[in-house]
Length: 447
Image (cartoon, rainbow, N blue to C red):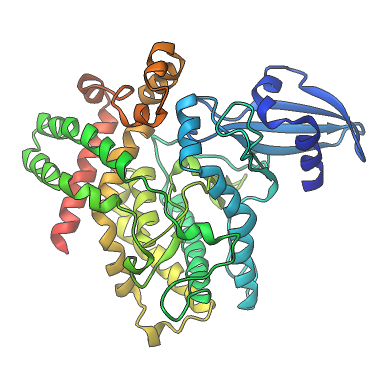
């Protein structure tokens, strides 16, 4: 399978032509050595607002004998603002390094512990072909691409990002995260030097270097929070509004890139962007119950406290109602699976003092971070106008000309943000933001 897709993409230079081929109902047909005549069909896999750092497509390669091979493909965004962001943050460098080098290394670590996939699952898709084009920058001619296992034909799908995950879906996601985190914990331990530094294999060394989102995130927080404070006051929650306003000056420290030595005793390699659209579930055809999960979009991996991923997922992918009813159970479930995975991998938990309370205490150090992460993410998840405005902005020649020297300024501006009236009109977004503030405030006051 991998050889087929490598041959197709390299011979036909498909990556920069993907949108063009998708516009043709019959795709393209060509002769391919060892395979004969091949027809490549391409169709878009996502709508505006589903993916920000990639344009995605379903590919079907039809061989002369009628056999079909399917793949899911990611290329640089056609939106020039998002394409600039993808290049600036080198998200494809990270994703390709994750799939091609990090995940295989984690499987090796699992094997060295005498474990199998059934013992400790790493629930990520199979990769068929990747290319990282360093010659054309972020231009439309870039051949940068990730070609992977096509999961939708196997019954995998995303949940509704507004409705959020069910309790069972959340439990399955957290278990997958816990196993992944435990494997990266062991990787960092294996390659740790006597002085506390790490010497990872060169192919994965980049995972130790976090993306520097500080300026972008602080700018977005300073832009968004005053309006959210006004909204919270509008609904009569003045004390919560005052409290949120008082937390704003902490955002720079929260998003500052941390040294490994600052991450504490449970440092792992976090997914970094774990929300509904980066998680696919498969369901039992008879009962409808969730039975499998895949974690995708490994573009923001970074060394961190595992609480970052757990809080990010729960804040952005579950409803207040689910967290009120099941929040503590979900946290406990993650910690139980995480501790079990560490024990399977040979960590002497009792000797090192790593227990449920210890992990929980470490997690809570990321509580305030989760608030601001949610404030940034939830509007983009729950308000379609933001993605629509961003799409329109990218097509406005005059506006784009004003950001010609620095497209990242456009992403940090409020040009495509919703206004106060649009915010109030989105009842679900207002409710989710208010509860997030209240939930965080109560949690921090209980520490």
